[in-house]
Length: 330
Image (cartoon, rainbow, N blue to C red; front, top):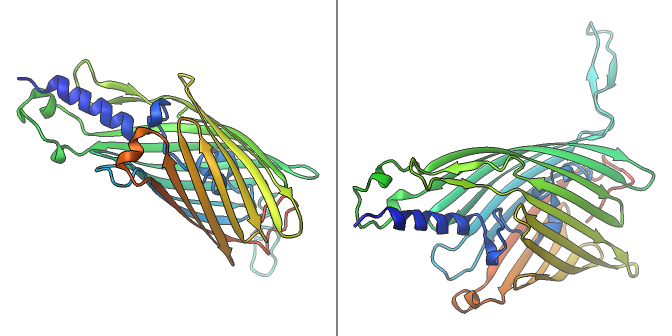
């Protein structure tokens, strides 16, 4: 018997799982529970918005206990070009002139990630340019990113009935996909809000040479917002939300409540529509930030899993050098 229909079905299922078609909401991109701790991963306009030079590592292990469960790992870096940055304009060594190279409005960033589920692996990178306009109390930011993905199917781990099938022999298990993201973001010491769009070009994925070989990355839309209520000298309450929608208008929302203590410790809880409760916590030690989130899935998959775990480690530099009025210090 021919393996072609079964292989096509397998690729479709594996691709959808890997691209995070999570609880039937058509989400194709990596999922992050601690979205408020590194908003740059979902909105390019955030690059440099805090004024720090920041490095962030996120590791997510989803549905622990299930074989070949999804795993996502990312490393990001972002910075703000200093307001007082000078370059030499002199024609001689004895007489030099300097002038400001930037007015402090430019942010740069980038990140790399690996997203794996079963036999399908996606590795990507993104480079970002952001421009920030300051107001009396806050700032408005615009961002543009270029991204590049590689999709790979591990053919060596496939269990096949007919290894000589024509589809297997002509199957291209590596795909290179370019795309772009845009975003807008507002922030001040109390409030942040942003809109972003990913996979603008909705690139097609071609896995073979037959008739069932084209899959498309859907364009995704993100809305994020949060507000900090200062309850007293050492307690800050922050409600926030992240709303996600795909090009086929499938929605998912994370609704979160967090409490900060002395700006050095925090704990929170989230509800994700579609059926998940998330408990999170973390602490700040000098320039380092540590965070952890546990996702408890309310669907039937929880009977076969120990939940999902997400770890975050960040380092933020430049606090003393970048005293902007809109600097968020936690």
